[in-house]
Length: 251
Image (cartoon, rainbow, N blue to C red):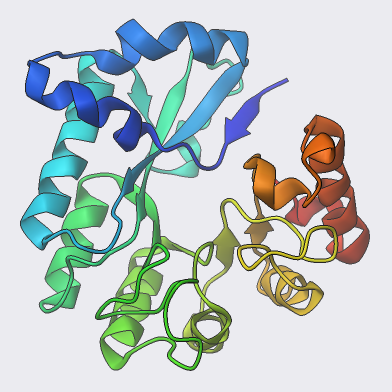
C-alpha cells in the first residue's frame, strides 16, 4: 500500500536546525519515521503564520527544497512523477499561507511554482492582503488581490488549498476558481463541531469541483472528548465524508 500524506509541517520541524548549519535534516532525523509510517509520498509544507515578508517566505521555501534534495529525496512536479515502483519517500512541496504576497502577484506565484510548489493556501489562520483565515474577521473573505492569486494558480494548475480559510473566504474561492480545490487537512463538522472542520455544504462543494478532503490527525479536530481523540474516530471522519460525497473525495 502506498501512503500519501497530504500535509506535513516539515518546514517547522527542520527550522530549528537552520541556524545550526545542519544539512540533510530530513534524511538524518526523519527517514526512520517515514519508513515506519510506510510513507511513499508526503507534502513538505512551508508554513507562514501571517507576519512573514516575501523575502522570509523565499528563504524558507529555498531551505526546504535544498534540504529535500540534499537528503537525496525525489521531488514531485507532475503526476508522471508518481511511480508505482517508488522506493523510499518522495516529496510534494506546498505553501501554507501567503502573507508575504502584497503586490506583484503573478511574478511571486510564478516563483513559488517554479521552485516546485504545487499546492498552496492563501492564508493560515491569519488575515492578510489576500484572504481571511479562521481567526480573522468572519465577514471578510477573499480580496481583489487574492482573486488575482487564484487566477494565476488556476493558470499554472497549482492547486488551491482551502484548509484554514474562514467560511467567507472558502465560498469566495469556490466561486472564482475554475479548477478543483483541495482541503489538505480538514475533518467534518458533522463529526466534530470546531471552526477548522468543514460543514456538509462545504464538503459537497469541494466534491462538486472534483476536489479532495484530506483528514486531519490533530486531536482537537477529531473529537471534543479527549478519550475519543484516536485513530478510530479519525476513521469515522473519513467514513462520514465518503458516505456524503463518495470515497474518491477522501484522502
